[in-house]
Image (tube, rainbow, N blue to C red; front, side):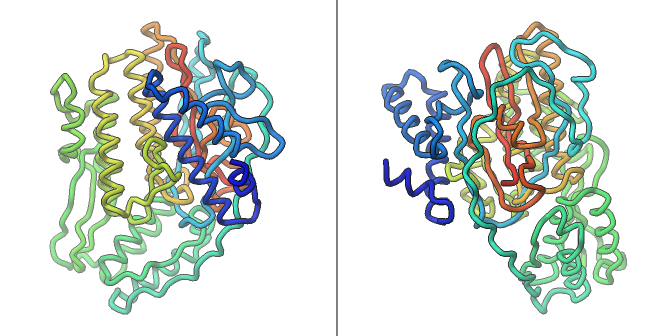
Length: 460
């Protein structure tokens, strides 16, 4: 392992970055499997292998790390935070937004609770996280590779509408694009329909005020004139009222997407959530299961439409981040999400077990993202907010029922947030400011004495 350790610590090597990424993926996969199979015949050897991998990933001069999923500076039973992380300097620059919401101020085992701690402001609000004192912050993670230079904007196909192509190019050069999305290139769209879809999907990543402005400009184009043939819509089940997600473009045959109370639920999500109850979520049902079924349908459907989406679900994404433009990757992700929905459906409402299952579904939903994360206040940020709000509200009910539970949204700076993560966080070299948490992938929680570490994407 000595050669592998030396390779992984080289600061300016793409091969070193690749080695760290694979090792971090192996560590994450084995850690998850070990948690699920602690009595397996290979458990002891697995722990030894994890220790070796942790030693390779540990920064030079620091002690070897413990098993993932624990807090820094604690006993062997509690473990220590791992600091090796996956770099993504050669990846495309897009991700999902997840700003900081209000945190649960009580650490594990605490019985203190106040209305101020229970509040949940909009995604993106930099709310400080109150917590009990913890051990000193571990050493800084390894420096990521140098950012890949932004690619120049690509000229759209001459078959695309000229006015739409000009508007798309203007979007990529705009200040809001530079601020929130990083370097962005107009795709080589084959036709007007593909370019329109890309444009509207991109707006879902901007704060709503900017998205509304750009969407209005697109609606004023001649190609979007209302004299066009009748509009067609795909309608999905809404949480609150009617909302247009993707406007149609009848002249180019593009079907729009909107949310409505009468919209159907995703068949696969309904089947997965049948559980032992066999009752379909009704319109207006705000139970954790019903909300998760609705959000799961949205996320899976958009994953099939948006070629810039990725997922980094730790139990599946062994290499850190996996593009969802691949049909097999989408199927694997959806299968994992369906299994988590099924586990949620089988739990007793208001129980610690339901909270643990809801945390797992929330992780799956929040692990679908662009690189770098979309902006706080964007449509994607509101999806993450709805999911995490569901978990926080469920935590309150479980605690009211006497459950020993705590949940925290991680701090907006990585220096603070990593005190509550398992160490397998994802650094990006684009988006936000250095040290900023760009997306919350998994909430920190303690359920009946068992700690469940958080996970984030941050600006390295």
